[in-house]
Amino acid sequence: MDPIVWIIVAVIAVLILAAVIGAMMKKKKQEQNRSQAGELREHASTQATDVKQREAAAKETEAKSRQARAEADAKAAEAERLEAHASDKQSTAASSRNDRDESLRRADEIDPDTDHKRDDDTDYDSQRTESTDTTGDTRTAHTTQGQQYDADGKPIGHDTTRTETDRDPGSHRS
Image (tube, rainbow, N blue to C red; front, side, top):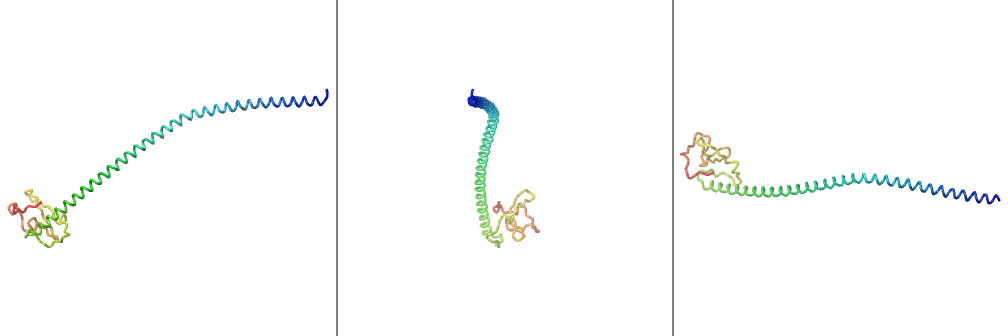
């Protein structure tokens, strides 16, 4: 045989051997990839339970957040309602105080025993005090420039003492 034939046969044998080795390597690589893919799937399935638990915890936290926000909104609405109610009561109290002060001013204007030196801006709460005698009778007294006067306009705290009989039954004011 000719050496050229031997060279051609040798080249063909080397090519066949390379093809077989290449196929075996490809098959081995595919097995490795299958094995690696299986491991990744197994790892992903174990992570799936963690993911579900985390999603459940996130949903629970979100629900608690919505509940807390709803409670806060309800409390804010209640606070607004109470503030409006308090404002209304304060307005009513101020109106009642003004009516009372006006009645006292009017009474002081027409009472001949009252000192008329008061200003129109007089705060009757700071000038009027209540004193209780030993019989438990509460009398209204007012002060002007440090001096205290009883409901009849007579000075209190001097040598004059008031008894129940001294008081005119028609002049009692609360």
